[in-house]
Length: 324
Image (cartoon, rainbow, N blue to C red):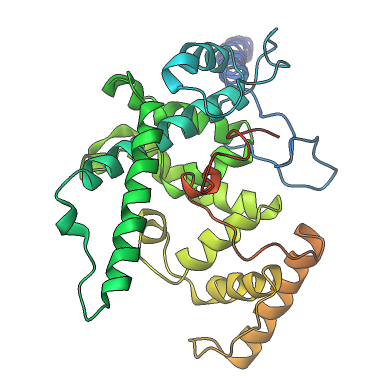
């Protein structure tokens, strides 16, 4: 009887070992299919020890003969460079994916703005008790804007609706390649459709699960624009990102204090839901973040998180999007 039981036990052990081994192999295979991102900081350099890096995604730049080559110069028609950027992005070049996505976002914006401006000019006149001189200045300014927008839309000709639908894919790729020019727009939801059909799309579900972890990681990596997003998100609900993030008075106070230090703005005394001890703790944590993540250095107050204004100067762009 003992021999029988022993034999059964051995068989059970072998069966268990077989299935456990199979499970481990499957898990290992699954992990290999999701490569970790390169440990690069937001400046494109290899992250130093102890620096948080993005590890949430599935994108990892592949070895490609074109990865080291510069991207096309600024101000070229998008249709002229679209195929090259798309090919390089599909080859795993996160910088090319970033450039393609930002160019598409800007063209989408300029086309929408152009449609608005070509309507009856009287629709855009300022109302009120303005002097004739003020009205003339306003109309001249609108004419200049209309001319500027129409000139920019020329560089966006021959881009199809299907191509515009690729914004999310390539913006997300650029974000997970730790391209700073793609990261903040992706977190903000700029890769999503501009109408409310976005909330029915699979892209929206993907973005919603990733945006906050990415914003927190970007902040730990020292991206000042992420502080702007988080400072608003933890206390307001005025856009998709802030509306998706649960309000948190303690985190809101930390980000508000960090924002004041980072942009050299006097800290305001705010009435909030925190105790005096919690306020002191929040101030201490903000100071630690400022020193550790931002090296105690301030940044210009005019920093923009908008991918349109971020790369648009009154005349021509100073640099192409996603240039390092």
